[in-house]
Image (cartoon, rainbow, N blue to C red):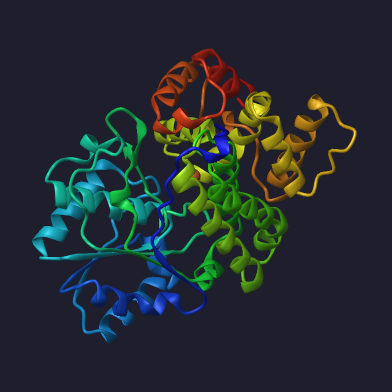
Length: 386
Ligand SMILES: [Fe+2]
């Protein structure tokens, strides 16, 4: 049987996409039976004004809420525990998350803990969540993580200094309210890093061993949209046209990777970001080209399709030239949007590489990488970008 017809499922939440979606938070929370809402966010989103838009919507629906905003860039086990305590102490029954991947992942993890009555560490890996989480409304304010449509939650384990990937249908939100206006308050560097995260989601989903014709459709559309719009979005953060296109790219990439899962870039980025508490999108942006060069031979036709979708002409090129053209295109994009291609400047030392490789091998995302990676292969990719 052709791989195209392998049995696959596709999970997606209800989502509303467009200007004004954020103002529907109260209405949707009420539809989900809310009596009291835990609003999970972080202080940066609070300052941007989007939390006030959500609380105004909750007020309009006469819904009481408590705000939990002690969420760091890489949400941590202790933060999940605090949020769960607040949810219970305040008598909440619905969670609304507003922000980037950090508050949304933290909200998902809080939901797991309050429904399952155990610490979040018990749920690392695939399909380990036993009981459904409380109703969850997600409002993304970045175009990268796609946690608002995905079955992923990533939590930093500060004891082992790595990140745990929790993959479960239980953490797909009940509804995503996706409003491109929210991107217009991001800094150019946040747009750059989160946009590269979206591109990485799309590429890893497209070459994943769990891809399907439906995830392929979303993945390639995301690649096309990122290539066409990310530099403009970084140059013009206030442009709703560029930000809208990036939000759509992120939605497409999210639908693709949530169902096709990811690969070695994410496995290595989780290990790196968890060890040094680094921005996730920046880690992906740096690792992406090295992993493509390593993986290319496992599915050249798939990488060629990605290259063509990015506007590269491959006519008359042999395999080596094709890899080079794709890697150069992504390197140029990364450089144009101001992301440096090395990890040494972030504090990584050569002596850290064996432990980074060890944790990357254990990450759930490694299972769907198209080419088997040995520990030595992973170490070599980290070394090349030191
Ligand atoms: Fe990601």
